[in-house]
Length: 73
Image (cartoon, rainbow, N blue to C red; front, side, top):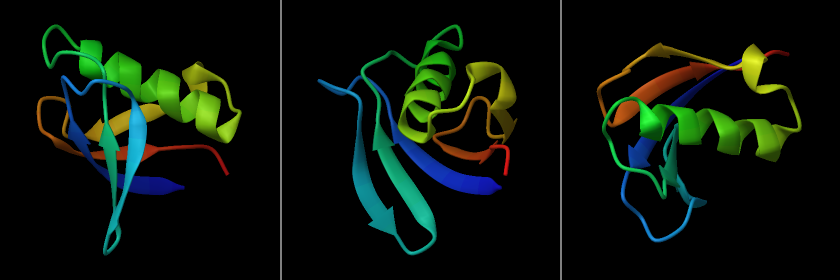
C-alpha cells in the first residue's frame, strides 16, 4: 500500500493533522535535518499501523515535505 503524505516538521507533537483529498497530513516533532523527520515519520507510522519499522520505506520525497511511503499489505 502506498500513502501520499505531506509532513510539517518541527511541530510541538507528532500527530495526524487530517486529510486533504488523497493526501494525509502529519505533523512531526522532529527537525528536517539529517533524516530525523523521515525517521520520526517511519516510527509514527509503525506505531499507528502496528507494523515493524523495517517494513516501511519512503519511496520518494526523502528531502521534500510531500512523500510517498510504502507500507506492507
